[in-house]
Length: 493
Image 1 (cartoon, rainbow, N blue to C red):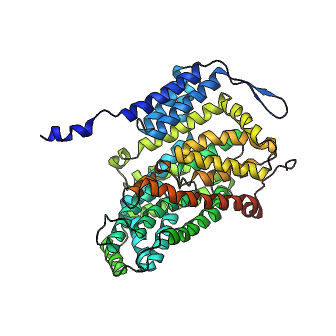
Image 2 (cartoon, rainbow, N blue to C red):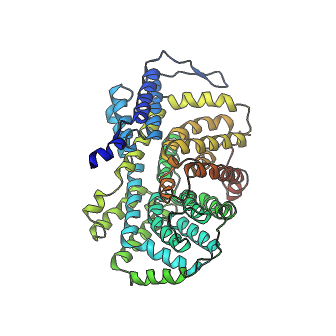
Image 3 (cartoon, rainbow, N blue to C red):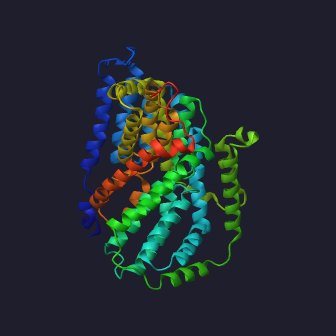
């Protein structure tokens, strides 16, 4: 009887089959199509799209379709990226799969481990309860307090881990707001959707907030032969990330104004929960010391030559080893690392380098350049930022960076634009996919609250994305130049 009852839910997934075959079809058409026309730059130089380059585009199309519609787990799609490169002789297998263990990928792994440590030890709960004790019972301050705590946690944890950690707390808060925890309200919509948006805004500030920063800096180092330090990235990103956090607070206070001004009893409940945690444990203290030391070492690399010689990945991986040396984590925790996400980042690195090394990125860049060859440098930078913002809503932001950054860095010198402003503008918009749930894991986590539909998320995401683009324009034209960032080359406009 049970089998019969569940049978209708186990029907064949035709939608999945359609998108799976769509990816395969696009790959086949592009890879086996006749040679494509050369790209011609404004100086008249021709750029040939080689067979390998066309193959790289074919792999990207298949991976893009499979990533967007998740016909298989996103990490499995990443494996397909390496397999196709090797099977169709686009790049040697030794090269294609070597990118899967790029230092940037290991940096991402270590960041996820830090998130796991903070969650397991209870440090995040302790911080959250303290926050509620401070902000009190006013819903406007609960919005602000939740968003600020979310932003602070993304400075030291991957934004996915932050969202996963804060979600149960927000559920508890909402349970004190509404008699029916499953009933959607404006406050619930703003609380959970705001958490997702703010997790993205806060994650741009440091390299620990998300994978995209490490990936982008890896591409920037390889393409431009320049290294951006942990401190330099934070210096330029902090004012933008925090400006967005406070603007989002104002935004949700307007579009999702709480029905109630206060939640009676919330402060007392937070105090009781915090008291239940007891004094700081040995593991909490050790975890805080290890993570704090790692962050300090990463920051000091800009000032101490001896530390600068040590790769940032080695520093943060040392923290991972110490978590196991001091038995803060165990084998079970290692097995629970989201390897699906790690593989996603690995595949993104592989397809990004594939597009670059086969010349496909340069071919795309020159074709894209034709659209902007007469544009002002500011229009060009904003166009790239907008392009990344759109892409990051359809594919994971790491993949969006992997695809777009090499192309943008090729175009930039033609228009006299510095690589720095391209890098940072792209990273800002890549971190904030406000339109589609598939754009980032915090979006999906927030959706589990059932406080909003995907349509509501999209509709509120449109004005939020407009605010984002305005902030990027302000950063590019005013804030970053005042902070010392060069935006144009000496010979550029």
